[in-house]
Image (cartoon, rainbow, N blue to C red; front, side):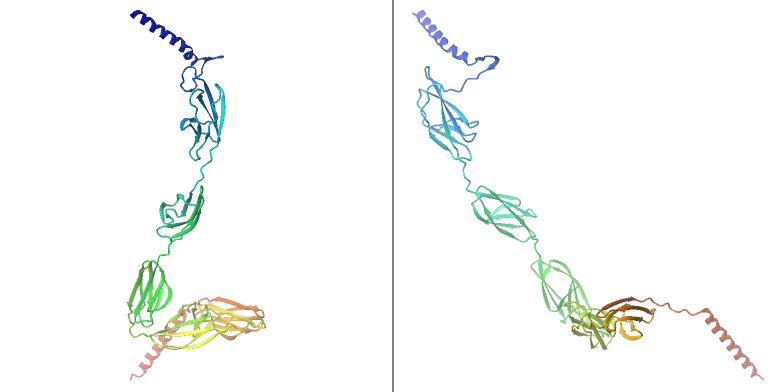
Length: 460
């Protein structure tokens, strides 16, 4: 009984080996003409004996799409194709789907299973997902500015801000030492728009309040005149500045002050009175400015807009003040100078219509104050403008004590205003000759001899 069972089992094993042997041999079949090449087994579904295989050729418009049959993953398309084998006798699949990142998943109903060994094509089209947000690339000069988009902080420049809704967004930048910057920028879905900002350096300004005792002192900040005390000066750049207060009869007060951003710096100064002042000054203004000013024929400079020309160190008394400016009539006035006081003088110059039948000559000299003669006729003291000169050749002579006389000639045309600038040469100081000294000594000796002779005759 036992022997028959063993024989029966051995027979079953032999039948199974005979049935499966050819299949295993086919897995490593050698291709004709290529003895060393092998064909790998095709990925076919496991099936029972007698089941056939057919194929679905799934085509997609993009590579790398994941293909699923009834949500069962089958593979990824390569070159837009994936061939999927199926059992002809198994329960057929009903739906094929394709998915890929960045694309909408698409699906369709599978056609009937093709006959055994045949292929059926299936086409799927994947459409890209349309973006719903956009981005902004924000840069600035200088970089490192804090970036705010719609009041939300996103870091510092350069910075790419993503996930923004399409439309207009408010971009704001802040940077230490620079003015805040803002701008409305458009955001486009699926795009990165560029925003570039050029930051403006912040003006760090403060205020200076100046007072003095006594008041009325002239204020000079960094050598610029700002009026008289008391005075509040706004818009002064932060940092150190030179401040000077001057008032006739008082010593000048010079100091250095520091201005702080958005703060008021207060300076109050008691001026020190100059004991028994012996001189005064004249403060000259003119309209228009840049007129040449002479006091008693001595040139002292030009007026400037908004700042009086101060002529100090004048002994008390009455002075003649003259203002000259090309194209305007000369103006002369008198001013009384008092010790320790500043006498204001203001000129309003009147334009002149040029005389086209005569010529004018403007004479300046270094040093000024020289006497000017035209054709040996006294014309005035330099600097001066001599109008009404007849056209033709004229001789000009300039003299000044201690300097060599200077003579020049020129041909003047009608309507012309010629300029003559002269630099005088100092005259040498005369030295006493030795002969003169010897003659004086000899004369003294002779007188001494005569005196002694006369003295001897009086003796008995």
